[in-house]
Length: 424
Image 1: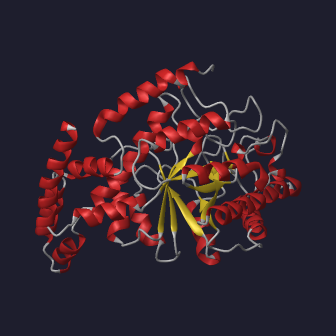
Image 2: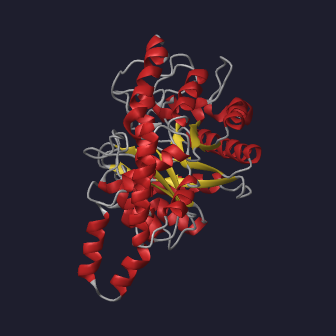
């Protein structure tokens, strides 16, 4: 009780300070509450999925490092862990599923055979806990992806296999949207590319375009599902050439009214994904963001409140684009407590968004339009030390979520009582 009183007192002081610069914190917290983060399921089990008992990530130019004990081994354990995460983060949030996380009843169901019935349990659970779902085709960890190509493969039979898989995933996404009465975003990422120099790049990109054209022949109600296309600069095993580059997908999305997915770990370390947001939104209606923390590039570390994430959130808010940008997480760290990783990453994105929402954009824009660049710079600097942490703690309190660092002991208790008792 005493700690709560201190949080409320600190908030009152912060509220006065922000009000003095034209920001009403009550309105800001209402906005923050209604911006969902789509939290990725694959942090909980190291991208293994549940196609078979010994499923694990393989191929596709991605890998998970670390062997921290206690990963989810079943759908039930994954849901249990995620419910714990939901109890420790404020706001309205979503779960992002990959196709390998269906409930297949112990049967071998190949990727070109997945159906909505394999995800009925997820829909029932989502209704019970009160969240929405997003979805991803899984074009990796499969024998037909072992040579590094899927939708752009020169073998038509392999292309057709993956086309069928993605088409089925779009149908499952629409099923989610109908059942949960909210649009589901279906993201397509493929590992296609070459380790060494490639002579015939054009043919692979022509094949990918043709595959996408076939995939998108069937249209869905945009209130049920929307498509996103995710690029990459390079990957393990595709260091010299990636078929689905940023240029390719940006061109395809603009020409075909699709959504681009910008993963901030998928670009050169000196590129600003924040800067891309306002550019892409000139030509596409919406953008999907996959938020991660690249260390020496796309290593998918847990998101933290760093300059890159805060810059992205500032760009979205300054562009008045919260209703056009979808926020999702994409990291997988097996070296630390997996539940803790989820909570740290989600709260970091929410904090960055709060920091951006507490910025008096109109005042800064006025300085800019008047050529008052010293004033603009000085104001931006002063904002960095405003008490936004007090507003965050109050928001957590308001949402019935543990504020501050006290959630650490809650995760430690969950590890002691639940995850540490799982056999690896």
